[in-house]
Length: 102
Image (cartoon, helix red, strand yellow):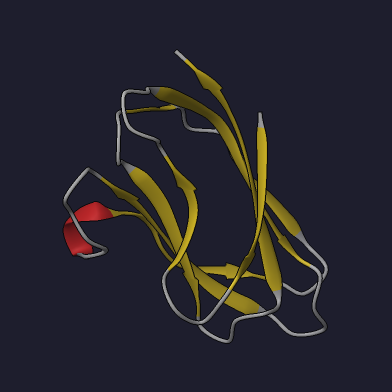
C-alpha cells in the first residue's frame, strides 16, 4: 500500500495505523519538489504518544530543493501508532510511505 502526503509546517501525520491492525512500513520517500531547501523532522509515535525528542527518528534533516531521500528503515507499527513529519517552511515536500498489513 502507498500513502502520499504534502508536508506542512505543522505536525503532519503521514501514516496512522487503524484500530485492530498492524502495519510494517517498508520505506519513506521524502521529495522536495520546491525551489528552496526544506528542513524536516520525522517522528515515530506510539499509540497515545506525541511528537517529541523521544519519538524523533530523523531531526532537522536538510532536503535540498529538487531532491528525494529514501528512508528505508523498517518499522513494525500497532493500532494508533503513527509517523509524523514537520517541515520548517511547509508546502515544499511530500512524504510517500509504502507499507503492508501484517
